Amino acid sequence: MAKTAAKKTPPKPKTTAAPPRIHPVILSGGAGTRLWPMSRALYPKQLLPLASDKTMLEETARRVTSDLFAEPLVICNDEHRFIVAEQLRSMKVKPTAIVLEPEGRNTAPAVAVAAHMLAALSPDTVMAVMPSDHTVSNVKAFRSAMAKAAEAARAGYLVTFGITPTQPETGYGYIKAGSKLKGLDGVLAVERFVEKPDLKTAQAYLADGSYSWNSGIFVMTAGAYLEELKKQHPEIVRATRIAIANAARDLDFLRLEAESFAKATSQSIDYAVMEHTRMAALVPVEMGWSDVGSWRALWEIAAKDEAGNVISGDVMCEDVKNSLVKGDGTLVAVVGLENVVVVATDDALLVTSMDKAQDVKKIAESLKKQGRKEHLTPSKVYRPWGFYQSLEEGERYQVKLISVNPGASLSLQMHHHRAEHWVVVRGTAKVTRAEETILLHENQSTFIPLGVVHRLENPGKVALSIIEVQSGSYLGEDDIVRIVDTYGRN
Image (cartoon, rainbow, N blue to C red; front, top):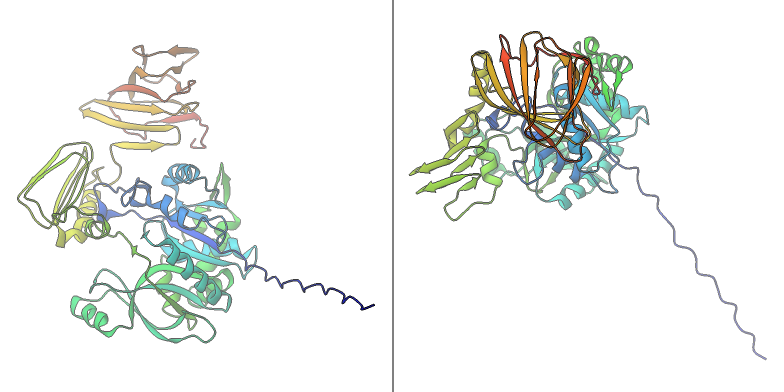
């Protein structure tokens, strides 16, 4: 009887462990003055839905939501903390930390803070540093480039993304690519970084073919960045390390210690590290990138009508071509113009030629020097409990719309220089006034005398809207003495 051959068990396929995830570091500290009057210091462009129905911060967070990435570490301005936290919450993004800068010190110290924190996990932790105010239309290409850059970072390189130039742009820095790096697919050596050129030089770079726009996105290990930074700016490494060691927890935020952080030299990551290191590398990528650095840049990436116009809001145009017209709060009518930018908010109007759009920042700077508020805040100001919007202002009076989220409350507070009248127009208000607590419904009102301790709460399930009329000798927001505050602003 013939023997039956024993069945061989096929060998199990070898499994390759996935590389550790990349840690995004999202920088959200800019003021976006070139996009005034929409972008203001207390509500800058990264917090606005300029290029889509999502804000630029939300779009940035969405790009790094995949198995390739760990949860992001966010570094932002103290004044923006509640807006940043709320926008991330709306995207269901849970950051590893939201770090608050006491003051802006440019990108090198901010990245050093992130590097210290991530190096505590491991010096080999790969971090991807990216601004929150850029747009990327091809997310697949972005993630593919990230994977290549992370591989190079694990090999010891400090990597940046190079954007293929489409025109002789004078507003960007450039990078000259060198030879291919052995064993790293799609990664080139960096021959040199170049400052923003004049038009003639930019045209030469475009014709040369070996130059890329500097995207401002960097991928490196935490340890490699700190090592390179220490060679050029040891004081930044030291100051940021101490600022973290002395940092304080504040609700969901990590507040850096101000005195130490202020000792860090204000320097960009380009100047402090990338232009000096011998380990700079470049991943060229076409991913539909823009830094949205001006109204012209926004016009270039936006969908246009048959006349080449980008129009949004309550706008009427007649014989208008190749222009951006935006109305936010008021009707805007434009007739017989070409290559212009017209942006209207309820408290400011901008009109400029498209060619001079970069100079809008000079208006914001002039407003600041004159002590005006239009550069600082829009009429609608967001708070952790909701928002308020200035409706009318005159000598010794101001009228505001106040909207309080369901279940939220303002601080228990008092004012030295003003009294307030409140009229409920929607929802239910719980009002604390001195020793009494009352409930107010629609069309009911109350009066808060000067110096009386008070609080406004929304106990309902819909947003509470009230009209507030302030009267007094001084109506500034700094005339608030917070006695009890849920949000740690005492």
